[in-house]
Image (cartoon, rainbow, N blue to C red; front, top):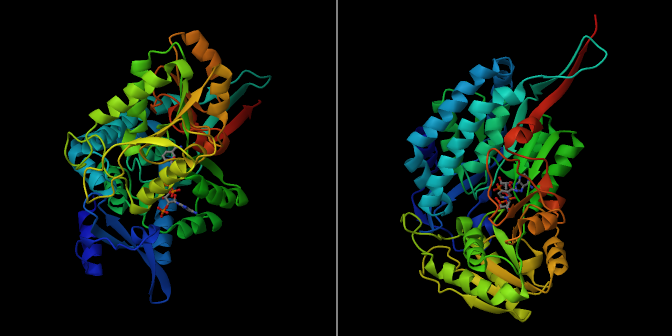
Length: 495
Ligand code: NAP
């Protein structure tokens, strides 16, 4: 982390650790516009979701500071794009080493800033390091020109960088999401500017510092502490060449409209409401336990967590029993305790949203099984199972970003597929059956970018990741992800 910069900012603001404002709404944790001379700037707060204490505050960067960084990035691109691929991959490899050396520190920072259990934060940093290893080992091959036989003496396809990629990223996997977007981009010769979620500014600065420690030239990866509106302005003013967003559909629609208006290459990784289908011939105990694990990933705040459990009638009772039994084994509490499985959710407004979604289900007649709330402090939301959920309930129509699990009971395969596809999302899906040929047949009928059979959906650097329908556009990871932010240039040579 940029300790000096963080300290300087903190003392400049002359604020000390204090209880977060109890006022309702996003603004309490995120930003508050203030006037500083002629320039409108804001305060970005880092608030610990477990203690509810403000840990740090940062002024957003002024337009002049942002312009200076963009100029530096543009300059850096001129050198980086012409650096041989193999030389570019040396700091990529080193970045993985930096992550492993600092794993504990980074993990604790993540936990303090967004509340995920520290063992999960450690796994996230390790996974980000694995991604660095993967691109360090494979990017040269992915970027090698492809020869194509034509009537000409020589025809080939070259993969060249686009320029400055703006990465707008979410807080839920605050390392992994950034690395997933940035590492293939810089490997391909692009430079990256990061606009991270405004509740994780310390993590955003720590990531910039990790790139520096790995030996990337200044300007190849920069963090901007800015509001969404300032990120939009970068697109509108043609200061960036491409945009990668991971976030909500609301953000996707807004950024997509601006990037489309400026004809910029865009990858959108958006929300999900993944179905988890359990057929009558499944290993129901394993399915029930895996389903609970999937729902509780990151205390329920994962785009690819299973969010709707679609179970055939004959398996429903046993599935529900094992699902709830697994939930009861999980320890809810202090996220810095290594034995904790479920921490608080990241922001108070997220907890309020979950309460409203559960209330809606109950008002519409749902029976629920709710685990006890263990602590009075912290933004905890204890896991809740919604039994026999019906299609009019928000827990099925909206993305539920926290530990609520609606179970839908169906009579047959056709009903299962119809229920699974009855959503505007299309990120991932799971199907459980001992007959894998049957499951693969059904997988073809699922509208999603990923289907896991007899497992939960998990991302892997080697496999492309992304959604259809309103879950997004384009892919990250594997060679598909790396080739999103390149100019696929055709060269034809005749003598
Ligand atoms: P979010 O509110 O959309 O924020 C994501 C990022 O977009 C943040 O940096 C945010 O900045 C920025 N942003 C929001 N509105 C914007 C706008 N109008 N213009 C420019 N930037 C804007 O999402 P979140 O709550 O952080 O993350 C949760 C969502 O991300 C869920 O829907 C989840 O499913 C999705 N997600 C998807 C994937 C995937 O791979 N498909 C992975 C992880 C998460 P501020 O924080 O300053 O508002």
